[in-house]
Length: 196
Image (cartoon, rainbow, N blue to C red; front, side, top):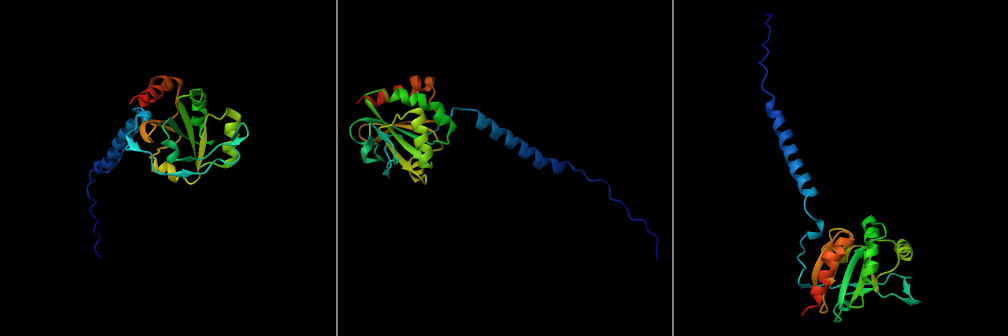
């Protein structure tokens, strides 16, 4: 048996190990920058200038105005010659609570209708939300499984659509409507929808 001492190979450069880490860090920085920049209310919608998707949502059971049951929402009800705002909301949505005063303000207008699309909510919670904050909607459709919201291209709640009298989507606002957004974006979109 020989007593050979095995040679220890020289240390190889380990800088190649840093390459994936640096690539990941760079991509993460780009992703975070993209998330934090821009205005979510300006997300594009392929449905602008298209007819509202066909849907038929049942009423929120137990919701009444002056003792009369508030009806559900259908695509046909959006093409009755009046401007309609379709607001996608849920009781569990904090931003929906933030925008609610603006919806109550819009409900005072006699030139539009407000339709609520109650998204993946529980009936009792939705009723409690509207009873506590007020009901701005002339109709509320229950989208229990979220299928209608998918058809509408909803990214998340709240979202609001302006529908002209023929049932065509003419404007989309993503996120909670602030007082400033109401003045500078939503009301001008309503006014524009009134023009032939």
